Image (cartoon, rainbow, N blue to C red; front, side):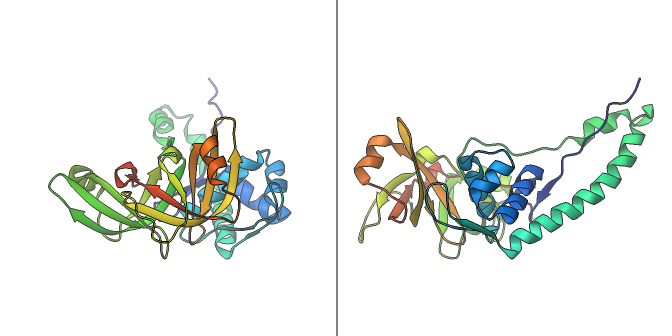
Length: 267
């Protein structure tokens, strides 16, 4: 019986913290060619919002942004790849060429009964999460408590995220200063407020940023803040709240998140 053709899906890991696959590289290439998110999205058959979400995710997962965006309306504006973005494309394409040679040999070997289990060993494990926000950072400090521990994750020059997790979780994840980790935050856990001097809340995390996108829906609205170093944070709030707060692109706002609502992940 003929052996089915083997296909390989290449994924790049940057310092073990984030994955970039062919679909995201294709969008980066399209952004370089077209210079706008709307045109690039059309080229790779994505919605504008889908492409925008990918750009945010990539910029959040790398230490420096891969794509720089300039506002210009709901479907306009210019985009430009940074040197880091160009480097990621080059690295992926180089690795992809090497992978093609490798899998020519692997595919030939799959016809040998002695290596039958090889196919099952070639699975690629990918982290999937329903959390809207995934921000890569470096553990700055871990403070032990009787039951829980406080972990501070540096995700930008002036942006810190504080998470409170159990001590066994700290040990299981190997969290210590210098360890890279990803903060997962559901958009519904993010409370937004206008940036006001002297604002005091019980939320451990108070992240100030600039509104860069507002997506209004029938029931809920999605508001995205730009933090520092190309990082973004998205909140889902009720339509009534969005209308009452009058958030618009360019406004300053504060994202409030309880430390217990932060989930940490490592690879």
